[in-house]
Length: 328
Length: 245
Image 1: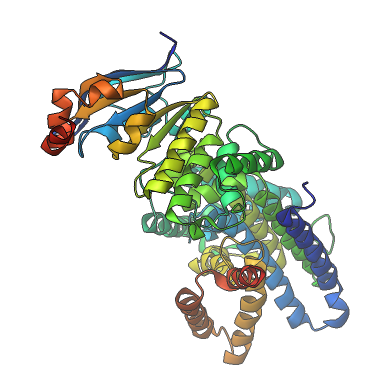
Image 2: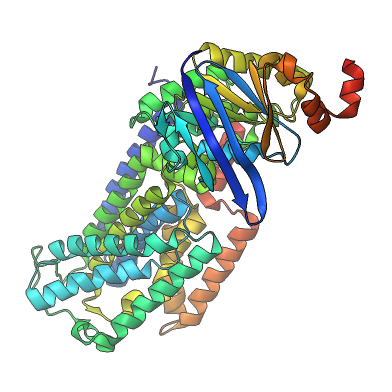
């Protein structure tokens, strides 16, 4: 009887599609030899993963965070502080960064999850900004000068590669797949249902036995943990971090936008959104020359406005609705 | 007298200067269908929320199965076996009908497969078979009422609190609603219903508790209640008295 369930079939199909996508993307370096293009690929995969992590808290559980740069920065700083000061391999650093970020998320969530709607969003921005200022003034962590990651030679043990981008590419691909897989598992788990119920109607959820506050805390901790893994990865990838380059508000936006563009609270939204948005950003930068800062922001703004006005459910949401109509 | 399932003792609820419930006491026995009635502003919804654990009363205590649950929140009371519906339906609009009900089922199981099976069975029971894959937002208002009931039943409650579940239904739909409430009781659950539509509730309930201005003014079988002078003047009004005379 379970086999006839269309939803379980859809789940299996999704998993197959994801595996095929990963296999195809893994072959891309055979064609894409250009270092700049490979760089764009790495960033696209990383933002797909980050946005997928953001989507857990903001998409599924409905707690819109515009302060995820805090967790990203926590991951980057914990990884590099452990690496430079204590010689701890970045693998452990990333895991430690994840735990630190999850703890911060719980500490932030404790007061903030009592806030509703816009007030919660504002609180996340302010707290992330406070974290940014803190790192800007913390001398032990390099303050505004940041941390220059020392070169210890190419190795997987040290997760450091100077001659080729490919190891980073494969790690980013694995990271994106894991973040997707976590979401895929959440979708058919008790937590997943509870989070969506909390998003749709917290009062009704409570009446059905859902501990709303605890649910939000769990979503925040998981979301922050994964985001921090991305932060640690990014620090190794660029081998230099300072508050501006890992904790600025722009990171918070770049984690939210792919999910919003692709479809907030959907399984494929973040990946689809990142695949469109990140290459677009990098192209604008190279065309506009130098930083191209103004232009990419204008494009984000226009895209968000377009989505908000035309298809608030995002690309994936609009497609699945159309498919449901034609099926009915 | 059979065992008392719910015991409300001296519950008072103040909102600033307003006293919504004043020293309300009532008992519900296992297997009963109790109607909580009274005019608008009588304090029915406030009492309802106190029983469901949404708001802790200013004074007094609430016992469920002999246990003091006054300090427990709504989720814990649900786990103990108290389920409710809402006067204004609160569906999970972006979730499918079956998923809405699964949320309720998850209080008893961690397995999605088990929750899904139970949700399906519950949807059959309330008469929403065939709608399980629709989005909750697409349901008609009477269907949404049924969904609320299904969600509550999926938590395997001992006590079901129905908050104006018949409001806004056509007479034919309301009759089906009455059948559903009876079927719920026949499954061994106890029902407390806040209801406005007297014609529907009176034949259905075993006992009525009448609230007016935050106080219990009468309590008893519906036949006696409709003849009670205080109830008639407070709630039913002159018109009804003329008709029943």
